Length: 254
Length: 201
Image (cartoon, rainbow over all chains, first blue to last red; front, top):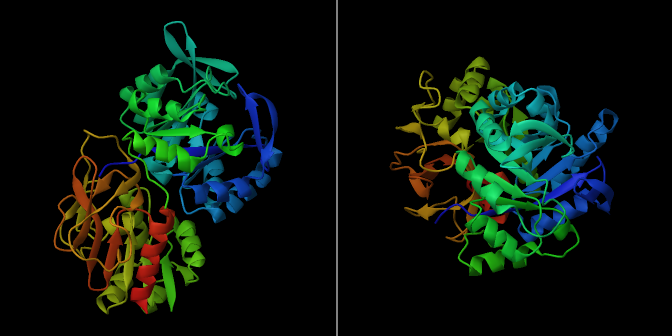
Protein backbone atom coordinates (compact mmCIF):
# COMPACT_ATOMS: atom_id res chain seq x y z
CA UNK A 1 0.00 0.00 0.00
CA UNK A 2 1.58 3.24 -1.17
CA UNK A 3 0.87 6.27 -3.27
CA UNK A 4 0.46 5.35 -6.95
CA UNK A 5 2.48 7.06 -9.68
CA UNK A 6 0.10 9.15 -11.73
CA UNK A 7 -0.30 9.18 -15.51
CA UNK A 8 -1.65 12.54 -16.67
CA UNK A 9 -2.79 13.34 -20.20
CA UNK A 10 -2.53 17.01 -21.13
CA UNK A 11 -4.84 18.90 -23.44
CA UNK A 12 -3.13 21.96 -24.92
CA UNK A 13 -5.94 24.07 -26.32
CA UNK A 14 -6.33 27.28 -28.28
CA UNK A 15 -9.28 27.90 -25.99
CA UNK A 16 -11.74 25.66 -27.79
CA UNK A 17 -9.80 22.92 -29.65
CA UNK A 18 -6.90 20.70 -28.67
CA UNK A 19 -3.76 21.69 -30.57
CA UNK A 20 -0.23 20.33 -30.67
CA UNK A 21 3.21 21.38 -31.81
CA UNK A 22 6.90 20.57 -31.47
CA UNK A 23 9.00 22.66 -29.08
CA UNK A 24 6.02 24.94 -28.51
CA UNK A 25 5.71 25.98 -32.21
CA UNK A 26 3.95 24.82 -35.40
CA UNK A 27 0.53 24.11 -33.90
CA UNK A 28 -2.07 21.86 -35.49
CA UNK A 29 -5.53 20.63 -34.54
CA UNK A 30 -5.65 17.42 -32.46
CA UNK A 31 -9.30 17.10 -31.56
CA UNK A 32 -12.20 18.02 -29.33
CA UNK A 33 -11.27 18.46 -25.65
CA UNK A 34 -14.52 17.02 -24.31
CA UNK A 35 -14.27 13.85 -26.43
CA UNK A 36 -10.65 13.33 -25.39
CA UNK A 37 -11.40 14.01 -21.71
CA UNK A 38 -14.18 11.41 -21.68
CA UNK A 39 -11.88 8.87 -23.32
CA UNK A 40 -9.04 9.43 -20.83
CA UNK A 41 -11.43 9.32 -17.88
CA UNK A 42 -12.63 5.89 -19.08
CA UNK A 43 -9.11 4.60 -19.91
CA UNK A 44 -7.80 5.08 -16.38
CA UNK A 45 -6.04 8.45 -16.50
CA UNK A 46 -5.28 9.60 -12.96
CA UNK A 47 -5.81 13.27 -13.59
CA UNK A 48 -6.22 15.63 -16.53
CA UNK A 49 -4.48 18.92 -17.34
CA UNK A 50 -6.09 21.47 -19.67
CA UNK A 51 -4.00 24.42 -20.80
CA UNK A 52 -4.95 27.47 -22.82
CA UNK A 53 -1.74 27.96 -24.76
CA UNK A 54 -3.10 30.92 -26.74
CA UNK A 55 -4.14 32.61 -23.48
CA UNK A 56 -5.50 35.68 -25.18
CA UNK A 57 -7.96 37.87 -23.30
CA UNK A 58 -10.74 37.70 -25.91
CA UNK A 59 -10.67 33.88 -26.01
CA UNK A 60 -11.02 33.62 -22.22
CA UNK A 61 -14.79 32.95 -22.08
CA UNK A 62 -14.30 30.16 -24.64
CA UNK A 63 -11.63 28.52 -22.46
CA UNK A 64 -13.79 28.73 -19.34
CA UNK A 65 -16.62 27.07 -21.26
CA UNK A 66 -14.16 24.33 -22.32
CA UNK A 67 -13.22 23.77 -18.65
CA UNK A 68 -16.90 23.51 -17.69
CA UNK A 69 -17.60 20.97 -20.44
CA UNK A 70 -14.47 18.94 -19.67
CA UNK A 71 -15.11 18.95 -15.89
CA UNK A 72 -18.61 17.60 -16.49
CA UNK A 73 -17.05 14.48 -18.07
CA UNK A 74 -14.57 13.74 -15.32
CA UNK A 75 -14.59 11.66 -12.15
CA UNK A 76 -10.87 12.43 -11.72
CA UNK A 77 -9.07 15.67 -10.80
CA UNK A 78 -8.74 18.48 -13.30
CA UNK A 79 -5.92 21.03 -13.43
CA UNK A 80 -6.34 24.11 -15.62
CA UNK A 81 -4.07 26.95 -16.59
CA UNK A 82 -2.56 29.11 -19.27
CA UNK A 83 -2.72 32.87 -18.99
CA UNK A 84 -3.58 32.99 -15.29
CA UNK A 85 -2.16 36.31 -14.10
CA UNK A 86 -4.36 37.27 -11.15
CA UNK A 87 -6.32 35.79 -8.28
CA UNK A 88 -9.51 36.65 -10.20
CA UNK A 89 -8.32 34.67 -13.26
CA UNK A 90 -7.76 31.68 -10.97
CA UNK A 91 -11.15 32.08 -9.30
CA UNK A 92 -12.96 31.90 -12.63
CA UNK A 93 -11.06 28.74 -13.58
CA UNK A 94 -11.86 27.10 -10.23
CA UNK A 95 -15.51 28.17 -10.47
CA UNK A 96 -15.66 26.59 -13.93
CA UNK A 97 -14.72 23.26 -12.32
CA UNK A 98 -10.91 23.01 -12.06
CA UNK A 99 -9.57 21.40 -8.87
CA UNK A 100 -6.12 22.90 -9.30
CA UNK A 101 -4.71 25.93 -11.05
CA UNK A 102 -1.35 26.07 -12.80
CA UNK A 103 0.71 29.24 -13.18
CA UNK A 104 3.90 29.81 -15.12
CA UNK A 105 5.12 33.11 -16.65
CA UNK A 106 2.94 35.31 -14.44
CA UNK A 107 4.43 33.70 -11.32
CA UNK A 108 7.98 34.32 -12.55
CA UNK A 109 7.11 37.97 -13.14
CA UNK A 110 5.25 38.35 -9.84
CA UNK A 111 6.05 35.49 -7.41
CA UNK A 112 3.54 36.76 -4.81
CA UNK A 113 0.82 35.42 -7.13
CA UNK A 114 1.71 31.92 -5.83
CA UNK A 115 1.09 32.99 -2.21
CA UNK A 116 -2.18 34.70 -3.11
CA UNK A 117 -3.48 31.54 -4.79
CA UNK A 118 -2.22 29.29 -2.00
CA UNK A 119 -3.94 31.37 0.69
CA UNK A 120 -7.23 31.30 -1.21
CA UNK A 121 -7.35 27.70 -2.47
CA UNK A 122 -4.75 25.85 -0.36
CA UNK A 123 -1.33 24.63 -1.50
CA UNK A 124 -2.83 21.41 -2.87
CA UNK A 125 -4.60 23.47 -5.55
CA UNK A 126 -1.56 25.47 -6.72
CA UNK A 127 0.65 23.90 -9.38
CA UNK A 128 3.77 25.83 -10.35
CA UNK A 129 4.61 25.06 -13.98
CA UNK A 130 8.30 25.43 -14.75
CA UNK A 131 9.65 25.21 -18.30
CA UNK A 132 13.35 24.43 -17.98
CA UNK A 133 16.17 24.35 -20.52
CA UNK A 134 19.76 23.25 -20.09
CA UNK A 135 22.15 26.24 -20.11
CA UNK A 136 25.72 25.09 -19.54
CA UNK A 137 26.00 23.83 -15.97
CA UNK A 138 22.41 24.51 -14.86
CA UNK A 139 18.80 24.62 -16.06
CA UNK A 140 17.36 27.97 -16.97
CA UNK A 141 13.70 28.91 -16.39
CA UNK A 142 12.01 29.71 -19.71
CA UNK A 143 8.90 31.86 -20.03
CA UNK A 144 6.31 32.91 -22.61
CA UNK A 145 5.67 29.40 -23.90
CA UNK A 146 9.29 28.29 -23.61
CA UNK A 147 10.63 31.02 -25.91
CA UNK A 148 12.47 33.43 -23.61
CA UNK A 149 14.92 32.87 -20.79
CA UNK A 150 13.91 34.34 -17.44
CA UNK A 151 17.60 34.24 -16.41
CA UNK A 152 16.75 32.23 -13.32
CA UNK A 153 18.01 28.91 -12.08
CA UNK A 154 15.23 26.31 -12.29
CA UNK A 155 16.24 24.56 -9.04
CA UNK A 156 16.26 27.80 -7.08
CA UNK A 157 12.93 28.84 -8.61
CA UNK A 158 11.32 25.50 -7.74
CA UNK A 159 12.45 25.84 -4.10
CA UNK A 160 11.24 29.44 -3.93
CA UNK A 161 7.89 28.51 -5.48
CA UNK A 162 7.32 25.84 -2.85
CA UNK A 163 8.23 28.25 -0.05
CA UNK A 164 5.69 30.70 -1.47
CA UNK A 165 2.96 28.05 -1.33
CA UNK A 166 2.99 25.89 -4.46
CA UNK A 167 1.81 22.36 -3.67
CA UNK A 168 3.12 20.71 -6.80
CA UNK A 169 5.62 21.35 -9.63
CA UNK A 170 4.74 20.65 -13.26
CA UNK A 171 8.19 20.42 -14.79
CA UNK A 172 8.54 20.58 -18.58
CA UNK A 173 11.86 20.04 -20.30
CA UNK A 174 11.94 22.50 -23.18
CA UNK A 175 14.84 20.50 -24.65
CA UNK A 176 12.76 17.32 -24.77
CA UNK A 177 9.26 18.67 -25.42
CA UNK A 178 7.82 17.19 -28.61
CA UNK A 179 10.92 15.10 -29.38
CA UNK A 180 9.54 11.75 -28.18
CA UNK A 181 13.06 10.61 -27.17
CA UNK A 182 12.21 10.29 -23.47
CA UNK A 183 11.76 12.48 -20.41
CA UNK A 184 14.66 14.56 -19.09
CA UNK A 185 15.72 12.28 -16.25
CA UNK A 186 18.60 14.35 -14.78
CA UNK A 187 16.45 17.51 -14.71
CA UNK A 188 13.48 15.76 -13.11
CA UNK A 189 15.59 13.95 -10.52
CA UNK A 190 17.36 17.19 -9.57
CA UNK A 191 14.12 19.13 -9.09
CA UNK A 192 12.30 16.27 -7.38
CA UNK A 193 15.10 15.92 -4.82
CA UNK A 194 15.29 19.68 -4.30
CA UNK A 195 11.67 20.16 -3.24
CA UNK A 196 9.30 18.67 -0.66
CA UNK A 197 6.24 18.60 -2.95
CA UNK A 198 5.24 16.18 -5.74
CA UNK A 199 6.79 16.70 -9.19
CA UNK A 200 5.04 15.98 -12.50
CA UNK A 201 7.52 15.27 -15.31
CA UNK A 202 6.64 16.49 -18.78
CA UNK A 203 8.21 16.64 -22.23
CA UNK A 204 9.64 13.94 -24.49
CA UNK A 205 7.61 10.83 -23.64
CA UNK A 206 6.79 8.17 -26.19
CA UNK A 207 7.59 4.63 -25.02
CA UNK A 208 6.44 2.82 -21.85
CA UNK A 209 10.15 2.52 -20.95
CA UNK A 210 10.36 6.31 -20.80
CA UNK A 211 7.69 6.33 -18.09
CA UNK A 212 9.35 3.49 -16.16
CA UNK A 213 12.63 5.41 -16.20
CA UNK A 214 11.19 8.74 -15.07
CA UNK A 215 9.47 7.09 -12.11
CA UNK A 216 12.40 4.91 -11.04
CA UNK A 217 15.44 7.06 -11.87
CA UNK A 218 13.84 10.48 -12.30
CA UNK A 219 12.03 10.30 -8.93
CA UNK A 220 8.90 11.73 -10.57
CA UNK A 221 5.59 11.44 -8.71
CA UNK A 222 3.57 11.77 -11.89
CA UNK A 223 4.22 11.88 -15.63
CA UNK A 224 2.43 13.95 -18.21
CA UNK A 225 2.15 13.54 -21.97
CA UNK A 226 -0.08 14.85 -24.73
CA UNK A 227 0.18 13.77 -28.36
CA UNK A 228 1.15 10.12 -27.74
CA UNK A 229 -2.19 9.72 -25.96
CA UNK A 230 -4.20 11.88 -28.40
CA UNK A 231 -2.82 9.99 -31.43
CA UNK A 232 -3.24 6.61 -29.71
CA UNK A 233 0.50 5.88 -30.05
CA UNK A 234 0.27 4.80 -26.40
CA UNK A 235 -2.82 3.59 -24.55
CA UNK A 236 -3.02 4.55 -20.89
CA UNK A 237 -4.34 1.13 -19.95
CA UNK A 238 -1.43 -0.74 -21.58
CA UNK A 239 1.07 1.75 -20.22
CA UNK A 240 -0.15 1.10 -16.69
CA UNK A 241 -0.05 -2.66 -17.19
CA UNK A 242 3.55 -2.34 -18.41
CA UNK A 243 4.51 -0.29 -15.32
CA UNK A 244 2.72 -2.65 -12.92
CA UNK A 245 4.64 -5.58 -14.42
CA UNK A 246 7.85 -3.69 -13.56
CA UNK A 247 6.68 -3.33 -9.94
CA UNK A 248 6.01 0.37 -10.31
CA UNK A 249 2.95 1.23 -8.24
CA UNK A 250 0.09 2.44 -10.47
CA UNK A 251 -3.68 2.49 -10.19
CA UNK A 252 -4.83 -0.15 -12.66
CA UNK A 253 -8.15 0.60 -14.32
CA UNK A 254 -10.91 -1.96 -13.84
CA UNK B 1 -34.67 12.71 -0.27
CA UNK B 2 -32.52 15.76 -1.02
CA UNK B 3 -28.85 15.96 -0.05
CA UNK B 4 -28.01 19.42 1.26
CA UNK B 5 -24.47 20.47 0.30
CA UNK B 6 -23.16 22.95 2.82
CA UNK B 7 -21.90 25.79 0.64
CA UNK B 8 -19.53 28.10 2.45
CA UNK B 9 -18.13 29.80 -0.61
CA UNK B 10 -15.03 27.70 -1.11
CA UNK B 11 -14.04 24.17 -1.88
CA UNK B 12 -15.15 21.43 -4.14
CA UNK B 13 -18.91 21.85 -3.97
CA UNK B 14 -19.35 21.88 -7.77
CA UNK B 15 -17.46 18.61 -8.21
CA UNK B 16 -19.48 16.95 -5.45
CA UNK B 17 -22.69 18.24 -6.99
CA UNK B 18 -21.74 16.78 -10.39
CA UNK B 19 -20.81 13.43 -8.84
CA UNK B 20 -24.20 13.22 -7.10
CA UNK B 21 -25.97 14.20 -10.35
CA UNK B 22 -24.22 11.36 -12.18
CA UNK B 23 -25.76 8.99 -9.58
CA UNK B 24 -29.21 10.45 -10.17
CA UNK B 25 -29.39 12.00 -6.70
CA UNK B 26 -31.06 15.32 -5.97
CA UNK B 27 -28.96 17.86 -4.16
CA UNK B 28 -29.18 21.50 -3.19
CA UNK B 29 -26.53 23.94 -2.08
CA UNK B 30 -27.21 25.90 1.04
CA UNK B 31 -25.52 28.28 3.41
CA UNK B 32 -28.70 29.07 5.35
CA UNK B 33 -28.96 27.96 9.00
CA UNK B 34 -32.69 27.17 8.55
CA UNK B 35 -32.15 24.90 5.53
CA UNK B 36 -29.30 23.06 7.24
CA UNK B 37 -31.36 22.58 10.41
CA UNK B 38 -34.18 20.99 8.37
CA UNK B 39 -32.05 18.93 5.95
CA UNK B 40 -32.77 15.25 5.16
CA UNK B 41 -29.10 14.51 4.57
CA UNK B 42 -26.00 16.70 4.84
CA UNK B 43 -22.71 16.75 3.00
CA UNK B 44 -19.84 19.03 3.99
CA UNK B 45 -17.30 19.28 1.17
CA UNK B 46 -14.00 21.08 1.60
CA UNK B 47 -10.50 21.61 0.35
CA UNK B 48 -7.97 24.21 1.35
CA UNK B 49 -7.25 25.68 4.75
CA UNK B 50 -8.93 24.43 7.93
CA UNK B 51 -9.31 28.00 9.22
CA UNK B 52 -11.27 29.04 6.12
CA UNK B 53 -13.84 26.32 6.73
CA UNK B 54 -14.25 26.92 10.48
CA UNK B 55 -14.46 30.71 10.02
CA UNK B 56 -17.01 30.30 7.23
CA UNK B 57 -19.21 28.01 9.36
CA UNK B 58 -19.13 30.48 12.27
CA UNK B 59 -19.58 33.64 10.18
CA UNK B 60 -22.72 32.15 8.64
CA UNK B 61 -23.93 30.84 12.03
CA UNK B 62 -23.99 27.27 10.70
CA UNK B 63 -22.31 25.49 13.60
CA UNK B 64 -25.39 25.17 15.83
CA UNK B 65 -27.87 24.06 13.12
CA UNK B 66 -25.32 21.62 11.74
CA UNK B 67 -24.65 20.05 15.15
CA UNK B 68 -28.38 20.02 15.87
CA UNK B 69 -29.21 18.19 12.66
CA UNK B 70 -26.45 15.63 13.21
CA UNK B 71 -27.57 15.06 16.81
CA UNK B 72 -31.13 14.36 15.69
CA UNK B 73 -29.78 11.62 13.41
CA UNK B 74 -29.55 13.26 9.98
CA UNK B 75 -27.00 11.33 7.85
CA UNK B 76 -23.87 13.43 7.48
CA UNK B 77 -20.87 12.95 5.19
CA UNK B 78 -17.74 15.10 5.62
CA UNK B 79 -15.28 15.11 2.73
CA UNK B 80 -11.58 15.97 3.27
CA UNK B 81 -11.67 19.18 5.36
CA UNK B 82 -15.29 18.26 6.06
CA UNK B 83 -13.96 15.21 7.93
CA UNK B 84 -11.18 17.18 9.65
CA UNK B 85 -13.77 19.68 10.97
CA UNK B 86 -15.40 16.89 13.01
CA UNK B 87 -12.44 16.62 15.43
CA UNK B 88 -11.59 18.87 18.38
CA UNK B 89 -8.82 20.95 16.80
CA UNK B 90 -6.33 21.05 13.96
CA UNK B 91 -2.63 21.77 14.02
CA UNK B 92 -3.26 23.87 10.89
CA UNK B 93 -5.12 26.48 13.01
CA UNK B 94 -4.72 25.47 16.69
CA UNK B 95 -6.57 28.54 17.97
CA UNK B 96 -9.87 27.45 16.39
CA UNK B 97 -12.36 25.00 17.84
CA UNK B 98 -13.54 22.20 15.58
CA UNK B 99 -17.02 20.68 15.73
CA UNK B 100 -15.84 18.20 18.38
CA UNK B 101 -18.18 15.41 17.30
CA UNK B 102 -15.14 13.13 17.34
CA UNK B 103 -12.40 13.17 19.93
CA UNK B 104 -8.81 13.78 18.91
CA UNK B 105 -7.14 16.31 16.69
CA UNK B 106 -5.86 16.79 13.18
CA UNK B 107 -2.07 16.90 12.72
CA UNK B 108 0.42 17.49 9.94
CA UNK B 109 1.68 14.40 8.14
CA UNK B 110 5.43 13.91 8.72
CA UNK B 111 8.04 15.83 6.67
CA UNK B 112 9.74 12.53 5.77
CA UNK B 113 7.36 12.19 2.79
CA UNK B 114 6.32 14.55 0.01
CA UNK B 115 3.50 16.86 1.03
CA UNK B 116 0.74 17.46 0.11
CA UNK B 117 -0.20 13.77 0.04
CA UNK B 118 -1.41 14.10 -3.52
CA UNK B 119 -2.73 11.33 -5.68
CA UNK B 120 -4.26 7.86 -5.55
CA UNK B 121 -3.75 5.63 -2.56
CA UNK B 122 -5.22 2.46 -1.07
CA UNK B 123 -6.94 1.86 2.25
CA UNK B 124 -6.50 -0.64 5.06
CA UNK B 125 -9.82 -1.71 6.53
CA UNK B 126 -9.81 -1.91 10.32
CA UNK B 127 -13.41 -3.07 10.68
CA UNK B 128 -16.50 -3.59 8.56
CA UNK B 129 -17.68 -0.46 6.83
CA UNK B 130 -21.05 0.63 5.49
CA UNK B 131 -19.52 3.25 3.20
CA UNK B 132 -17.04 0.82 1.66
CA UNK B 133 -19.50 -2.01 1.08
CA UNK B 134 -19.11 -3.59 -2.35
CA UNK B 135 -15.84 -1.75 -3.03
CA UNK B 136 -12.76 -3.87 -3.76
CA UNK B 137 -10.27 -3.94 -0.87
CA UNK B 138 -7.48 -2.83 -3.21
CA UNK B 139 -9.40 0.10 -4.73
CA UNK B 140 -7.59 3.45 -4.99
CA UNK B 141 -8.99 6.80 -3.85
CA UNK B 142 -7.79 10.32 -4.65
CA UNK B 143 -6.20 12.28 -1.79
CA UNK B 144 -5.02 15.93 -1.73
CA UNK B 145 -4.10 17.06 1.80
CA UNK B 146 -1.19 17.69 4.21
CA UNK B 147 -3.08 17.30 7.50
CA UNK B 148 -5.02 14.30 8.82
CA UNK B 149 -6.35 12.62 11.96
CA UNK B 150 -3.26 10.63 12.85
CA UNK B 151 -4.48 9.48 16.24
CA UNK B 152 -7.10 7.22 14.68
CA UNK B 153 -9.68 6.01 17.18
CA UNK B 154 -12.83 3.92 17.51
CA UNK B 155 -14.70 5.66 14.69
CA UNK B 156 -12.01 4.82 12.16
CA UNK B 157 -13.06 2.04 9.79
CA UNK B 158 -10.19 2.43 7.29
CA UNK B 159 -6.67 3.79 7.52
CA UNK B 160 -4.38 5.12 4.86
CA UNK B 161 -0.62 5.52 5.14
CA UNK B 162 1.59 8.35 3.92
CA UNK B 163 4.57 8.69 6.22
CA UNK B 164 2.30 7.42 8.97
CA UNK B 165 -1.17 5.94 9.42
CA UNK B 166 -4.15 8.27 9.48
CA UNK B 167 -7.94 7.97 9.44
CA UNK B 168 -9.18 7.64 5.85
CA UNK B 169 -12.81 6.66 6.58
CA UNK B 170 -14.76 7.16 9.80
CA UNK B 171 -18.25 6.01 10.70
CA UNK B 172 -20.27 6.45 13.86
CA UNK B 173 -24.03 6.03 13.72
CA UNK B 174 -25.19 8.72 11.25
CA UNK B 175 -21.79 10.43 11.07
CA UNK B 176 -19.55 9.55 8.12
CA UNK B 177 -16.30 11.10 6.94
CA UNK B 178 -13.64 10.46 4.29
CA UNK B 179 -10.22 12.08 4.01
CA UNK B 180 -10.05 11.46 0.24
CA UNK B 181 -12.25 12.94 -2.48
CA UNK B 182 -14.91 10.41 -3.54
CA UNK B 183 -16.14 12.93 -6.13
CA UNK B 184 -12.72 12.65 -7.84
CA UNK B 185 -12.08 8.95 -7.22
CA UNK B 186 -13.54 7.36 -10.35
CA UNK B 187 -15.80 4.34 -9.98
CA UNK B 188 -14.75 3.48 -6.42
CA UNK B 189 -15.64 7.01 -5.32
CA UNK B 190 -18.99 6.86 -7.11
CA UNK B 191 -19.79 3.58 -5.33
CA UNK B 192 -18.95 5.14 -1.96
CA UNK B 193 -21.27 8.08 -2.63
CA UNK B 194 -23.94 5.64 -3.78
CA UNK B 195 -23.52 3.75 -0.49
CA UNK B 196 -23.93 7.01 1.44
CA UNK B 197 -27.11 7.81 -0.52
CA UNK B 198 -28.38 4.32 0.32
CA UNK B 199 -27.80 5.02 4.01
CA UNK B 200 -29.80 8.25 3.76
CA UNK B 201 -33.09 6.67 2.73
